Image (tube, rainbow, N blue to C red; front, side):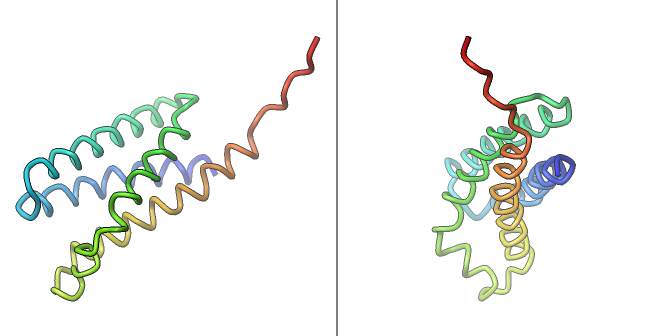
Length: 121
């Protein structure tokens, strides 16, 4: 399960690379730089994942929540398909599925691998 979570994190970064050029001319500069900052945060999580940092999964979980809470409510994202913007539609859909998968797998992994609480002395 750990490898699957790692792969989802790496794929999230890769889809960010696809997303950034697509939105550059579509959104105001402040929004582009906000998305870029989020992508940099995901890149740092991917680096921490690569180095097997212990506490990276809770951070990835929070980033997945933030990503979905910002992107899913936007009605513009749902008009991509209607407007024939298929690359944007696929990027949005696959990116959302990646985040949802992280929201499911990370808690399952953390619960399965938690250490029992130590007995009080």
